[in-house]
Amino acid sequence: MTSPVGTRLGSGGPWEDRFGYSRVVRVGNLAITAGCTSTVDGQVAHVGDAAAQTAQALRIGLDALAEVGAGPANVIRTRMYVTDRRHADEVGRAHNAVFGAVRPVATMVVVAGLIDPEQLVEVELEAYLS
Image 1 (cartoon, rainbow, N blue to C red):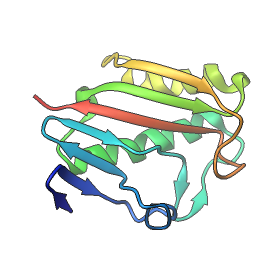
Image 2 (image 1 turned 90 degrees about the horizontal axis):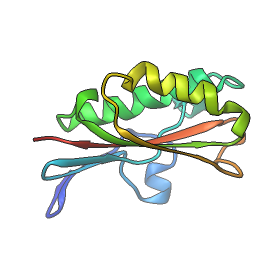
Image 3 (image 1 turned 120 degrees about the vertical axis):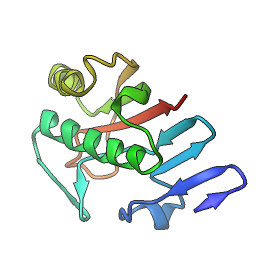
């Protein structure tokens, strides 16, 4: 959907319509994703595996950015929310596997929990298109 403030696209995820948000919004040269988890077809994928959940969440975010013309090289900021600090290293390594050459600014925060207790990590991506 194009609105006066840019393009807003959904992914059909289970919470977008219920909570009223878009998967990705592009305004001018900036594209931002909502929080992405390893939820696929309404089910958490890779239960118990923080690295695989991170890789899946990053794929979901990058797929959303691709819909508005951005690729991994356009990503300038990532945010990672992990439910346990013990997962930080494996989440960071999964992030590095995707963004090691790109080197966006990044934040990783330990949170009390996510919307589904099987989710171990949630990521947000921001991209700039010149």
